[in-house]
Length: 221
Image (cartoon, rainbow, N blue to C red; front, top):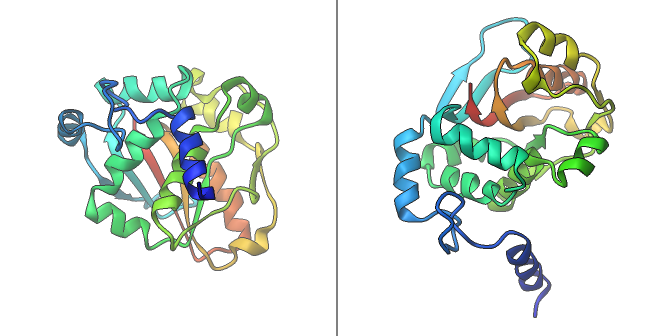
């Protein structure tokens, strides 16, 4: 057995090949019936950010954060259904327009979580998404040692907009910034609510003088 086949075998044990929505066996982690359901919900929007207080140019997202999508993301993030990253990514990559946009970036960075949160949850939901997207797009590199979360804070979902902006300040630090100079960066997270987390991350990343920074999330509130 080759190393790649062994790796895939291990992944299938950890993340069994089932449709993330209905639970039926499916090698693509999304059956045709549930794919049609997601297609009815999908937006595949690219929102240009004109606000000068923001440190990124565009926000890319697939869904609005409501209904079945909200339920799926909450399960993905808080109910140990980590395998849902495969469902989201496989659905995303079926859209030629978005696939082409993703290929225009050379660096993908997941929003980091603190070591305490990682130990509690067992995985970083944004990193799972980023790793799988990069696996499908050879032109990109997933960089995880430049943007670091150095504080454990109150979960943003428990706060209002003003509290979120204050809560997230100074939480991230930049390391190995030479890796990001003149790069086209796509920051990846699961959900965009007020934009406080994404903007704080991009503010820190801008110190490395990249060519461009955009943000991608599965859903937008």
